[in-house]
View (tube, rainbow, N blue to C red):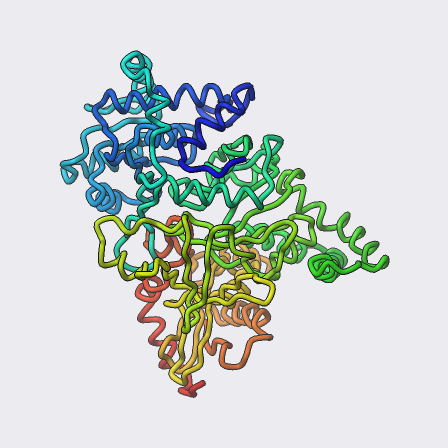
Length: 603
């Protein structure tokens, strides 16, 4: 198949090729599941696109989408692209005041909202948005003065269709360098920046990705990561449509376990936190079992790791190990596959580093995780492991057409057709990110091994340099800690300090179970985590995972937190990345007390 030039070529080509296919998408509405065919999708996109034109929306105008994942999100996106306007996806978890900034900065003239809750946010900030002329609601029952339902927009498009006889030709006339979308980076620090991605940026990434990631019209995927983020949008939205994969929309992130069992997908894209939770659940189940169950689990894990290492190295697996792995598979790994539906061919992982321990465990369960790497600014994929070439601990080889080089300070620089046009309304930030030779400075530290596999060692800004001059990459250490079922999150701090410390978010459900079994009645999180015996337990659990670290990397103190990080408190981005600076600021008093209590030895 020829390389794609624009996203309109992608959409119209895919809906033509699969026009006879009965199912393109599935979703739930009003308590029941429904299906949308490729022909229905094509018709509704044309109706919505012409409807936008009938409203007076013109090429180049910005149209925002504030919604959870659902077919209307996809239809709105493709309708905007066909019309030539620029869509601005907005995370549905954002509060109103943050949405106001994005809509004001982009000068959005219209916004599509999913439901009443999202509409209320827009109504609250509408006086601050002089450019906003239209509000469209996906849910039919959502009404207010000046709000148009999505069905009505489509009706307007059907009625106006005779005025647009060349709609298809106009959509295909869009050029690769025309702007497709402005995606605001959630950012772990600072003001959000609007990343300008063109049709050609994203289309080139889809083409290069599908050359090496097997996906066909016999596959099904589950869409649950936010479509507002480029990872899901490129992987679970554009790429899946181009390959003819059926897209099943999860009800919510909270229903992921049930949706995996219901739809039994063959391809799933997720962030490492999902894999950490699946692994932690398997570990917790084993630890809650009898001593025999525990021994069987850890024996299976050891056997699986040996089997995986030989398979990944493309070496022969001895007969005794093959037999042992078969037993481990029946006892443990088959149950992991069943939990994700039993049909899954592979996972795709991005957005944050994946723990090698977890990657090896899933591979042993014959659930390969293809870890990749990229950024919003690169549409997003720069490199990815493939089924034929997985190297655990790396993010794979560089995509065709993309150039990567490592700067003198270790920073990864990228250049290629997928690199953004720049930051919207921020020429200085654009100049700081893309040098005169066209190299995008990722802000990540990495290295390329002799076989061409890229390894990310840390974020340039997140590197901890102790007062003694030792450099520590916190993310791999945090990933180790998050494999323990007693913890849901971990943040390592210590830049310019005498030594590192770790803030630990306990799994309060697991912790209360432990406390109840020992007759401890404290239910208040603060009271429970403040108990000396609980502190000793959790610190001991943390230290078990850090035995192989260099001495200077080992945290000297732990701060046990009484609650999970959240998007609402500003400690997590919408894609669940920790905002280190916010967390550090929220617990500054406790952190300072921790350093004052600790002997002042330097590393």
